[in-house]
Image: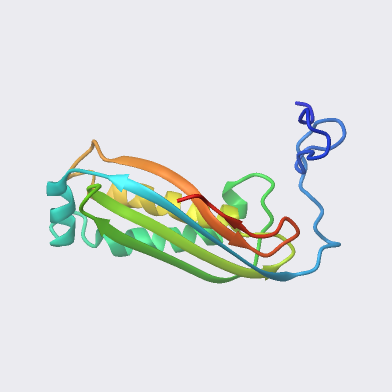
Length: 166
């Protein structure tokens, strides 16, 4: 593996030999950092209605998915190689029905005061919440589709703020 062709923006997780390594953030100042990610899970309108009515064979689909997302954010450094373990100040996972999809929009907000950002924690929270929602409702429909997991915004840090296009 080698560095990218644009030397002004080298990949931080590769050393001079092109080997993966954990970035040293010890010289960075701890600042408040926040990230918001989202994802969609598409399903039939019938499945959405059954979940909304509490008719899933496995019980509380949305509550379980929300809790799984929070737990996943806290375990990101164990799941994603080279991620720093971070002291998370807040993890909020919201799951909203979207009849026009039909399905659910999952959003995670993660906040910390640390030397590095929480984008991966927010993306992990959304991904695991979506996977858990799928697991909890697969008896109703196996053809559900997890889609468009992405970073919506981030604040703080050396690279500055980021806002995704709508």
